[in-house]
Image 1 (spheres, helix red, strand yellow):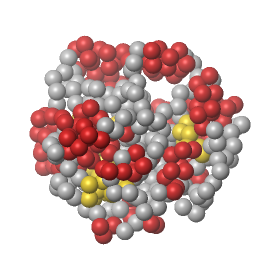
Image 2 (tube, rainbow, N blue to C red; image 1 turned 45 degrees about the horizontal axis):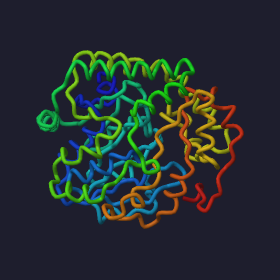
Image 3 (cartoon, one colour; image 1 turned 90 degrees about the horizontal axis):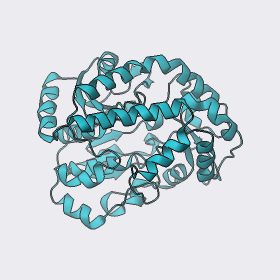
Amino acid sequence: MNLIAERTGRHCLSLPSNRLGLYLALRHWCLPGQRLLMSPISADEILFLVLAAGLRPVIAPLSARDGNIDVSRLDLDGVDAVLTTNLYGLPDRVSALTGKVLIEDVAHALESHVDGRPLGTFGQAGVFSLSKHAGAGSGGVLAVEDRSDLEALTRARDLLLAPGSLRADLMSVATSAARQVALRTNLVRPALALSRALGLHEPRDGYRIPLDPEGLRLALKQAPALPPFDPWVRADLHDYRRRRGHLVRWYQSRRVAQVPRTRARRLAGVRRLAELPTVAPAVLDHLDQPLFRVPLLVRDRDAAIAELERHGVATGYLYDPPYDDYAPAFAEASPHPGPARWWAANVLPVDPLHAARALPVLSRLRLPDRPVSPSAA
């Protein structure tokens, strides 16, 4: 947390997860019934956090250059607040979004910046994740400008925290440490196989968790309240509201302290992957950003994912289909859905730290058919 406080110059609140921080921020700055503009592509649980806060999701058009909100096609007059995504670390166009309540999801963008200013400092709140760049398994940080907001958010957090346990903390640290060993020692395939055999992955409908529309309608009757939405929000992180003890906090601080040490390697990987013809166009505009993942746009993505696993490279952070196709009854559809559908079906995010291991596969991949031109979107 010290690294984030120093980087942002803001007051920081420690959390068991990024997702809890997003809920707290939405509840603190938005009123139930307000309309929230959000990207069509992000993690499963984000949509449910918006619904849990009692807000109406308004799905924005997406730019196929970077997978973020396409500000050239926006009309902000009809919305009350905006939630950014900064997908894979590529910055949203925050300067065009600051006229509204702005909540920055910077889970993928711990080290990203705009004109030298860190992401997470443009809006009322920046919500960071410790499980991405830091690889700490779980944990989040909510960064705010005013101490009065920090105090109110601390009280709201404490009301939502579930009791912790040493056993849960030991399991969290052990699982995260084992994952880091697997990534470093080319044991990705057996680690993935074991994880799947143990049932550590939630069932998916494509790349999304099962929607359960009837159950979701019942939960909506209790919004704004978070616990009724636990069946959706906790996916792949059942302890997202569990209080963390000293062991986890120690482990997280150790992992976060190592982030600056990987910056040069991450930047080098971004630049190597940017030489591929399949790289998303916006990456070329951000070669100075140590991205969390480098998005490629490829044909036959599922075959490529399987081949990468055989080379010891795990692929995750796929968000297909877009929210308005996934949950049309619960979100206001994007006026321009084509780019989001194309991006979601073809994007392949690659860890720049493993660029050398991945390149033998990636160099053979071809561009997908382009019903929408990324350069024009």
